[in-house]
Image (tube, rainbow, N blue to C red; front, side):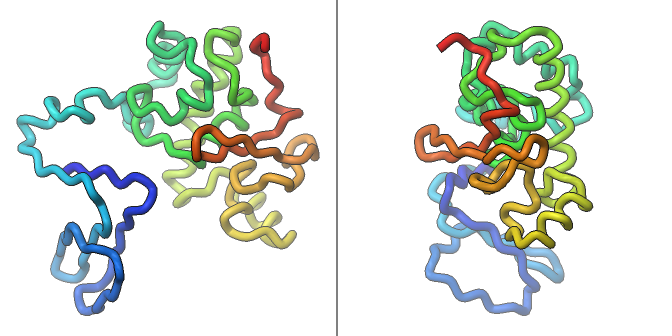
Length: 213
């Protein structure tokens, strides 16, 4: 089953015995003996035989999964410097599912901050060391988020920011949803850029633009 969930669809997981009330249209229900998983509001759903997955218009173009063991640091570097991607801005590249699959909006901000890459820079503008740092951040931050349920900072740092009064949507990250807060590294103020309708939070002091404007 393939579904394109855009920005407004919703998955819910409940016990089978729980009655779920929602104004949304229920599109998919998957059940086990104890639980029910429901997809609400999705507009694009396909049921595809396994043998035909590679022919699906979207799936056949999708890039490697960064969480898969077969996706090495070397492969990430190779794709960053390839002709297909090396002249794309970081802000665009991090959400391009043909580059790597599964990188979403909060990971974009967090990866670029961790690697100290300005959102308007391209791989083309960077040296070998900077490309390696970027590749490492793509892999490491994605794994950290997966293992911790969406946290991209250490538990001790999250606890510290929580104690300082930050909400969960900000204390679990380094820059995403922390615009106007102090940078955790340099104490400058985190700023926000908009690309289309997607927000990107970054530190203008740590993520200095390298490309010529």
